[in-house]
Length: 474
Image 1 (cartoon, rainbow, N blue to C red):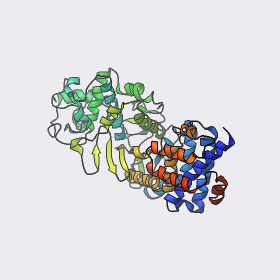
Image 2 (tube, rainbow, N blue to C red):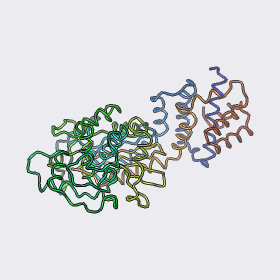
Image 3 (cartoon, rainbow, N blue to C red):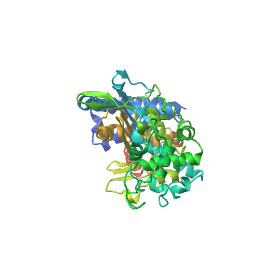
Image 4 (cartoon, one colour):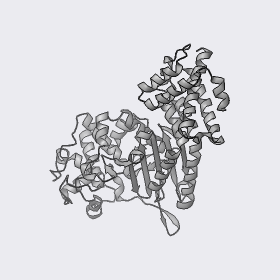
């Protein structure tokens, strides 16, 4: 590419940033922000302009990390505050567009033995596991191997619940009491029962439903335990084997697995806090079932999961929309339940999430699709501020207007997907700004196109040196 063309494209970036200066009433004009902005533009120069081709994933990740470099320090400050004030012990990851902008382990995998975490430390996800169960069932529906509006007895005929459908189970509308009562009162063995054992217990000792199926929402671990049993019958393989083949391996989630009675050395242990001391939570008879819990994973693997979920690699668009569609019975003013996911309509837009609590583990996975934002918190010391901490980390990201504006510009106009649009800028055409204005209009960014058009009217498009001098980009 000729030198004149490179200067013109640099001019495009400069004008976009001048727009940011004016649009944000001077928020970028402080010396610190100006320095941050110059650093980001220098990085963008080498990637967006010098190549004139789509960025690789690694190059795009570098740009995102540069944009949120100062934000990550604020996230770290919050993490440390929760460590000091609330004994946070675990791992946090915050990602933008699938790129981790902050991640840190704090504390110990085994608190009693003072064994620190590492990148291979697998946390019990507790009820965050339910989304894997729901997605696995919907995958079988995509393959025409089952239908979620079929009755439970279609797949588990030994059970006496003819009016319960798989959809009722997915939405927590079946009315089942806790299966753990059955284990406590009717299980005679010293080893933990699996999902098929629970089905046999329910066939021998039928429990009364708490309400007519489909009339109410009541959160139920039993429903998801039964869904895992259905999956095993339909797929003809164990629940953990199915997830390995259908989900974990395709998404390269090589550090994620379903619980095994044989303890994996990288499994984090759960602890509870009693009278000033941490005590290890012992294994118990409730540990043998899948579906409602018992997926172990890492933050890096969970990020792969969120990216794969929205990419279409696991579910098609229609199935994902069904999973994220709130049940009529679970609707509230703000928080609803889909299939394995809670849906929260916040002031920042839609948030898809789930929390978990089991045997000393407290977890949360939160996705804001409209913000390209993911927050993951995994803890093993009965940490009680998981939701509060996650909300604070989201707030830190949302309130960094400087970084978010730069991210918006980069991702919308010069990211790895749209950089080829710059081929529309002719090397010797003094109407470069007009061409860019057309691009913005075509991309439904009329307000940005209007402002760029105004700059084109007011400025000499060849005033690169004047712009550089007056905005201190040198």
